[in-house]
Structures are given as C-alpha cells and as structure tokens.
Amino acid sequence: MESEQLKSRFNFSDSAKSCALIFAIALLIRLVGIQWGLADNVHNQTFHPDEEVNWRYSQQMQPARLNFLPGYYGYGTLYFTFLNVASDVTASYTGVPVGPNDWKFIARCELAGRIISALAGSGFACLVFLSGLKLKNKFTGWIAGLVIAVSPGLVVHSRFATVDMLAAFLVAVSGLFACRILVDGSTAEKETMKWAIWAGIFAGLSAGTKYTGVIAIFMAIAALLITKPNNYWKSIWASVLASVIAFIVSTPGVILDSKAFWRDFSFELLHSESGHGLVFEGTSSGFIYQISNLILGMGLILALCGIGSLIYFAIRKNSWAWILLAFAIPTYILIGKSQVKFFRYCIPFAYPLALGIGMLASSGDQKTVKGRAWIGLAVLGLSGVDGGGLASTIQNTGAMLAPDPRVQAANYIQSQSSNSTTLGLASDPWFWTPPIFANTGLIRMVPFPIRDQFRIQATKPRVLEFIPPDFNARFQWDPRLLTDLNPDFVTYSDFESLDLDRLSALQKSGIAFPLEIQVDISRYQTFQADLTKNYKLIATYGYHSLAVEDMRYAMTTVYLWKRTLAPSKPQ
Image 1 (cartoon, rainbow, N blue to C red):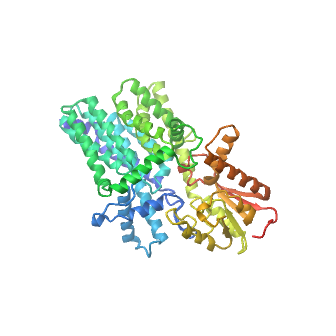
Image 2 (tube, rainbow, N blue to C red):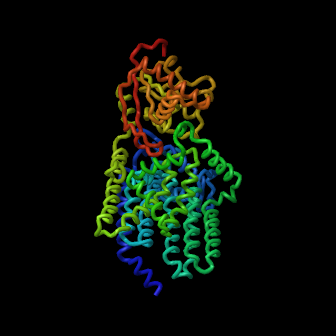
Image 3 (tube, rainbow, N blue to C red):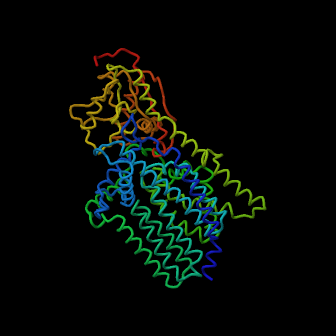
C-alpha cells in the first residue's frame, strides 16, 4: 500500500521524463558559453580570479593514496576532491601536463571543473522539480525547476569552476528528503529515520563544500518537529550526527590538519566581518544589499514572488513554507550580517524561492482570473520581461560568447604599438588586465618579483607600472606613473575604478570614511586629474555593468587612454 501511494504521488514514469527534460534544458543553457575566459593563444590564465587557485589547491590532494588534505580550508574539501579526480580523468583522456605550468592542460582541467558546476546546476533544477512534485504536483515542480534552469545568476555561476553550485545542489538534495518527511512522515514512520539521516548526510556534504550549507539540516529538523512521527527526537539527533560525520568525511582536514583548518576557517570569519577591500565599502547593509543581489540574479518578478510567497504561505500556516523558511531565515541572517556581499552567497536561496514561486503559480484554480494571473506572473518572470529571467541569461551568455573586452583592448593596443610604445598600468597585472603579455593573470599566490618579471619582459608595447625601490611600498593609482614614467597609453578596468568612483561620489556628498580609505580616494582623484589633463579617453570596451563583482567577470569594462601632450620628462 505504501509503495502504491508513493508511486501515485510521484508517477515515476512521467516524473522521470519531466526530470530528464528539465535537466537537459538546464544543462544545454549552461554549456553554451562555458569556455569563456579560459587560457588560449593570447593569455595563459583564466579571466576568473578564483579558478586557478581552486585547481592548484585541488592538486595538493592524492585521493588514490587516501590523501584528502588540500592544505587550504577557506572552503570545505569536497569540490576540490571532485576537481582533483576530474583533472586525473582529463589527463588520462587528453594527455598529461608537460610541466607544472602547462597552461593548456590547466585550462582543460578548469573546463572539467566548470562541467562539474554545470552538472550540479542542472541537477539543482531537477531536485527543485522533484521537491515541487512532492509538495504539490507536477506543475509546481515544472515552474520551480524552470526558475533554477533559467535564472541568470545561477546560469553564470554554473559556468565557473567554483564551489557554489555543488554546495547548492547538495542543499537541494537535503531539502528533498525534508519534503519527504513532511509529506509522508506521518504515514511512513519507518522511513522517517532513513530520510532524516539522508537529509543530514547531504547537509553535511554541502557544508563540506561550503560551510554555510550545514544550515540545510534545519529543513529536516523543522519537518520532524512539524510531523512529530514516533521517536522524532531520535530522528533529529540521527540527522545531526549524520551531518557531522558527512562533514568530517568530506573535509577530513578538520581532524587530520586541524591547525590549518582553524587558521583558514578563522580567517574566513574575520574576512566576513571586516569586508573585501573597497568592494563593499559605503554600500547598504547586507540585509538590503543581498535582496538587490537576488533581484539581479533572478529578476525582479521572480525574486519578489519568491520572497512574497514564502511570507504569504507561512502566515497562512502552510507547513511547507515553514520548512523552507527554517533554511532561508538563518541563511539570510548569516549573509545579511556579513560585510562581504557577493551574489554567490545568495545562490542557496534559490531553492526555497523557486519552490515558493512554483507553489504560488499552482495555488489558484487555473480556470479563474486570479489563478491565471499567478501563472502569467510566473511566466513573465521566467521569460525576463523585467530584464531578468531568460532575457538576462541570454544577455550574459552573449557576453560570454563574444570576444572579451580585455582581449579587444589588447588587440587594439598591440595594433597601434611598436617596440618603443609604452603602456601604463594603474595596478598590478591580474585577471582585470588586457593580456598584452601572456601571463598578465598570474594569481597572487605567485610572489610579486616573479610576476613582475613578465611585465618587465613585455614588448610591443613595453608595459610600465610605477614600482618604488621597496616594491612592498607600491600602491594602486600611483600618480608617479603619469608624472615620472609618461606612458604613451594607460589602461585599467572597472574592477579597479568602479568602487573608487562610487566612493568619491559618496565623499563629495558629505559621507566620511576611515583615513585609509580617504587616502585611497585621494590617490585615485589625483591620478584621474593628471590623466584627464594629459591624456584622452580613446576607447571603452565592455558593458558598463553595475552588477556586483562576481556577476561582472564576463562583463568587464576596459578603458584606454592616449597621451595628448609631449612628455615633460624622458621616459
């Protein structure tokens, strides 16, 4: 009888087809543009600042020898483990690296890491579909699954070799088991303990990917407290214990490399409290800023419908809404208090919000005006009539398929240069720099003297940066680049200038900043004054996107200035 009830609810054959179709739609969207920014004949490093770092940490592990210690614990270890295995498979099928800096091999491994994210993002859509199906019906699941499939922030981050999509996928698995407890716990009490344990395992695995994933266990706990099956406290403790074990198994460094673990974990806590340089200085509270990130990453209609539906159904005492809020509220508090406000911190929110949208769309009678209105609103949000949804995904995908602005700028500069031409940089070369020389994007783990040698050796044009005798005393936007070195061209990107433009405007409006930030603003303003006096802006490449940094990696804006006056000092 029990199996018949489950079969009736899930309707396995039709559900499997729908699930496969949603997965295929989501994966196809994610694979288009997935090779954006990888190393090629122009530049050796990816344009994403974290991907090579993740890959190099993953290579510290040797799973075949039961060594799962990357030596770095800013994140859990599970994604690094998958990336290590994917790199070994890449070597087996495409050729082993010819050296530690075989950039083509590294790019293939980073692509493998991106495919892991794309598969996780597509699986995320399937799990949301199954959760909607379990909570109500197939239509609910379809709407919710499509929200995940087409939301621009989720699609873009599914094309990066980073931890975020795998962590969100594992949150959704845990959430699906919590939904099973809620719906079937009172009639399948023997299964409840098993579902609770599995929910705990996947919450622990999510934490072993990105620490905040452990909050997913609150969904299972809430479901158990609401349904109160026999021995539900035993199920709660079993779920918690399972999550702890899963976390330790996926991140064994918490025990086997505890000193390094607590060093990096403590640093992440401090980083969350202190901020991310100038990136989020002078911005609104995280509680407000992350709402704007959700609107950016999903679209206005989808974000507001998701938030509104959870609140509305919770007020109406719908148990499923409280299950989802048991995860959403503590996650929101955690990231709202943080001074670091990247969009990627919002990605797990997509699970409760998508289900809320699905439940809202299927809440009314489809034969009534009100019922059709809810469906129409969801469809409008999915299509992106408000600039979000699929429309924004297409725009972001187009940017990832088009020639990158950094490459466009580099091509133009080189076409206008001879061996005597000079190009000035306002900051150390990094992912934001036009690839005038192949190693512009060397990660900051590489000591500065080594990185700087590649800049010094560049020709056509020669690349200049003002480096004082003590290179540790260098700083961004040093006006001496213009007054002492007099380069023919100057270039920088909005990754370098956007926050200082914003802070300068805030300072002019009367807002005071700490002394160290005032110094940065003053240097920038002096640099810009000298630049506009002696140089002319001759080209701008890119998109002028005001999105948060981790949504702009593929939508950089690069500025190119040319000297209009003869240099006052010899170069």
